[in-house]
Length: 250
Image: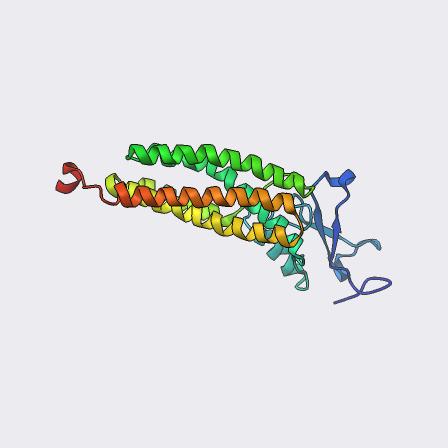
């Protein structure tokens, strides 16, 4: 590849000036050498123009991982590479945004699950968890404040997949099978959250973020308690439910 005047080709420049693109947003400009130069200027293509992460580029809006735009840029310049997380603090902030998105997504999914459930006790459990989830979002707001960052989410593909699977269960199951599978889906979410909060808590401890550590521990304990309640409901009632006569005849 050709080099620019005065040195090697610069493939990427990160622009983070709040006055130009707003707080907690950034652009990634890809510089194309050789033919892309016009009138002594380097032509730049905006690869990522909107971002919810303050430290590094996130996924392009409309594409889960920004792969479409990234691939297009790489096709023109194979040496273009992504900016990666390099520190534990980077990983902590990214994962915190990930779970923040997940919790907010659940506030929309849980009402649908509760409405679909046949068991009154399961409906109550899901509604109670919805209330708890909203409180956890407030706790996460406090975590962001404790580390001096704006509370915002980064699209979480994992929770999107779990919610999509749950939507499929609601469409394809009924009766005892529906309730049992709804509990299974809810516990899949709980296990994911327990893993995330467990990781975040230990990272917060390692980073010396004591307030964040305590808040994340509080949420983690709540998730574990919810998972235990769902297990008790499954074992004590839902899994043992007998099919209705209509279901049995079918």
